[in-house]
Image (cartoon, rainbow, N blue to C red; front, side, top):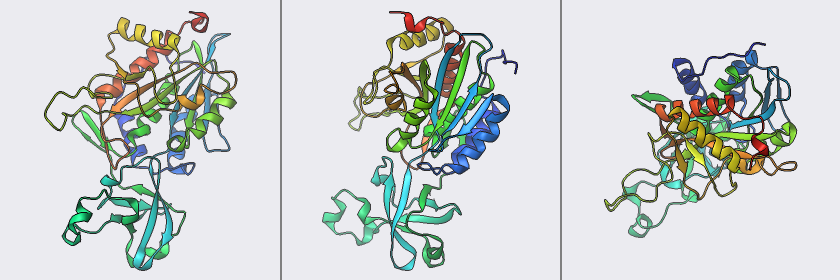
Length: 357
């Protein structure tokens, strides 16, 4: 297999793939819709592909030179959502969340249930019927119900997964859709497989169960046993004005400022050798980037770096507003620069990077 020498770019093909993946549904290890799309896309470019016991896709693109570094790239296929836990009368069901979801977003949101995508809505008591103390009390999931109507009740059962029904759209320079965390990373990883650098052995892990504890990545990293790892993800942007009109000094990342490079988060201290390489590549090639502010949250790197005898790891993310809600908003420019940074960093990765101080 001859390696491509062209640098990848985000064009109509990648945006169409992102739309397809954003509209697909996949929670926990039940990511069959997403996995099918990914497998069809990547198989022509891989030397080997398999699906492991947890549903991860593990793909390898061999290097074109001996003694190459074995580099794991990871992006997770799963999304946040819900699970049906109890049936009530008239097509109403109780739910639990899968992954971190802010309950305030939920009343009135359309959803899809199970493999047949039964349409439903998340319902709550309307404001007209609330008492004053109820209006001043934070809403909780116990006060919400999945409503599929009496005709849909026989098609839904406890254990079914429930997904936001948001449909992807491109609005000028923005991408709007559900599960952009981390379907953006999935498309980026698929594109890097297609344009794999000849100087590395690329170990691609499309992982499951990231949203409930980085579980798929743990298994994938143990199986691959790479020299180093780079995680491709999405990260929350908190860049809108503060509520009192003052300057927002507590942003996590911003839209339109380039890919977010993680120095530290709740689960990972990024490898300083990999960080310096990314900073140098960005500076030398005029690629805008930002430092993802240390704080809550994390990526698959939190699990990957602790496997075997330790795997040097770093994360690159595309910022997005309204994370873990029915919709995320990200910018095409940030995505394009993330892909450029990742590809350039891989093609210029020094063979002795892990021996450097």
